[in-house]
Length: 106
Ligand code: FES
Figure 1 (cartoon, rainbow, N blue to C red):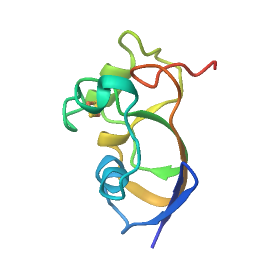
Figure 2: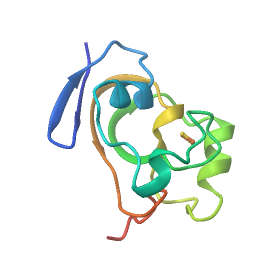
Figure 3: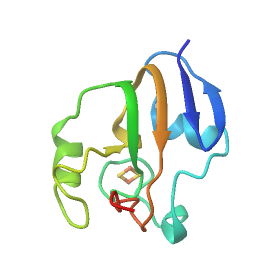
Figure 4: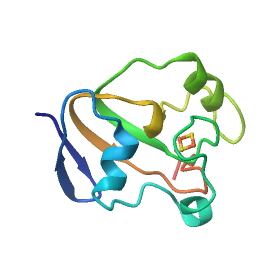
């Protein structure tokens, strides 16, 4: 059973669990600022669930690639959309600053 380390918590999930749902279920702060209310609820469209992921998750599909290539995200940021990731192994997940969690240089 993979574990996720996020904001000082360790969460156990099943292989294939959706990363966004797993974090929200354990009351982690996945969203910054008003994005807690203003997000697309996991449809891969708003980009506010972006996180840095270290570890094995599902490959990036076209919807995620498109959203992460569009402002304010940058194509080569290395971020992932939590709502589009399936957990495949142990992970360390980090939320970056900014409304969309897009500020990878801070
Ligand atoms: S919740 Fe909107 S892109 Fe993930």
